[in-house]
Length: 328
Ligand code: AHG
Ligand code: MN
Ligand code: MN
Image 1 (cartoon, rainbow, N blue to C red):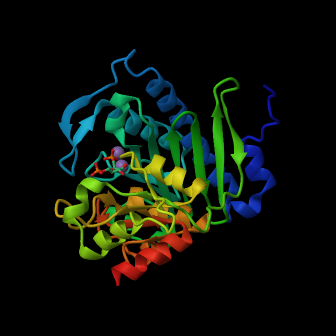
Image 2: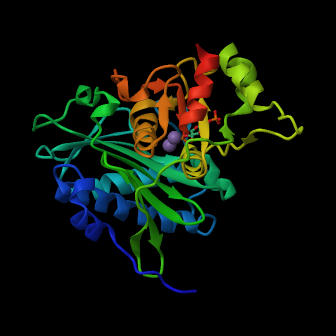
């Protein structure tokens, strides 16, 4: 196997300042903190079962969900690395009811789902970290309502997918770029610059167990996906891992659509706006796809509180166009 010539993050940011908005040094420093925390999480996840990290921590988070040991570990690693980086004023995390104050001189706000799909760790299935960054317009102590922004105000968004390899995917508003963690050299190296999602796709990611609890429009679309073509062959394929990051990543590369609509159990949707849907939506748009909360652009929602939920529909342009016909 030949080793490819690698471009690491710092070099990429220096060489392509046009991809990194006004402040490449600050973006670089935040992304380096993300890399540092992700490496620790990568190492720990890879030793799951060998170290005491599997299973529930025995507590519930603010949304009443069972917290996994690995959720707390990932959250702590991110808080630690972001505090050191100095540019983050405060964090809104899935794992903390209130925001976490880091640096009064920090110029940015960081929202995160430190471990997405965490129950999948117990069964050796991919998980992720999702993050979103806003620029502050003041300094000093941060108040929680500073996070009440529109998704289109994000200046940086991304995720780390701990899959068959660990990959950091991000956008600063000029394309989507991905860096794969090289365990041999201990660096994240550029593997997928300027990712573009196919305009058409045939993968539909939806928790079929929710079918009878979603609205008629969604039901009709799912039924449409199951129709056969003239030759009697299937037209779509269903893939749902219970790990948004993994489902989204696959669909972004291969062409597909992920939907988590409002359900009877989750009338406002299951996924969280600030640290799950906003960053995924920004990445989707930057890769040439779309993201809505049904019929409207998701990035045009103004958050009202840090743990707000929303329905999410995201993926390839033409699939997103098609689903709209059923939702109207
Ligand atoms: P988390 O582990 O952070 O709570 O998020 C899990 C999310 C998302 O990754 C996934 O798509 C969805 O919850 C699955 O929910 P259901 O089990 O209701 O399908
Ligand atoms: Mn999640
Ligand atoms: Mn989580």
